[in-house]
Image 1 (cartoon, rainbow, N blue to C red):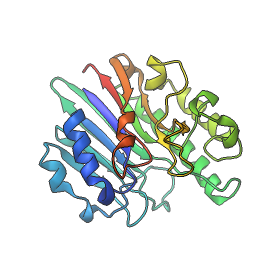
Image 2 (image 1 turned 30 degrees about the horizontal axis):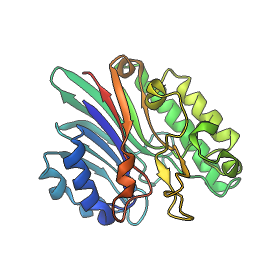
Image 3 (image 1 turned 30 degrees about the vertical axis):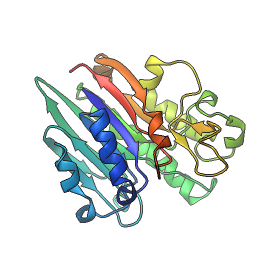
Length: 260
């Protein structure tokens, strides 16, 4: 089965691109970020017409996440535990079954954190710690579990074409990368790094300064696998060509294949 993540940067603006890619790639599960709409405004019918079940955790104008699945979604949960006052729509989790196998998928849109230092960066680091604690609890279930989404984290220098320009950015600050390593230390596997140890693999290119044309990208969209999911790892890819389509998102889909 194929599980994908894609920050679409507004479902209203990218619906045609999303449906085009779904018809081309045929992923089994897709985690979407930055849908930028409330639940009722999400174009469910257009997605359901392509054979997908849909779960949405939306927010007007900002944020918002969704999970699409070719099989019914169960045990759907919205919001990341640990802060009862956090109203931002950044976390959605569900279980989906394929044949004799089932997988739990969490779709996340981790905070950007800029400007740093400041309240937004404090929120980012606190959110990452909440995610670490949630993942630790889920790993106790010993089941295939994938945390997929826009992490707004550049893990290493090789994950940026020009790492030096990101040194003071919240995506690449030492505290951010340390929080990322604490997450991996739970026993999670970075799917892309399980298959590709080289640099020059990116998932985001800014709209400014010809970043796409210069391949001036960064890798901030990730798929983390529990040990039980990693045991079923087949391969991973980044659908870079989608960035060249008309009126694209600044992110592209990343897809992991598991043998369930």
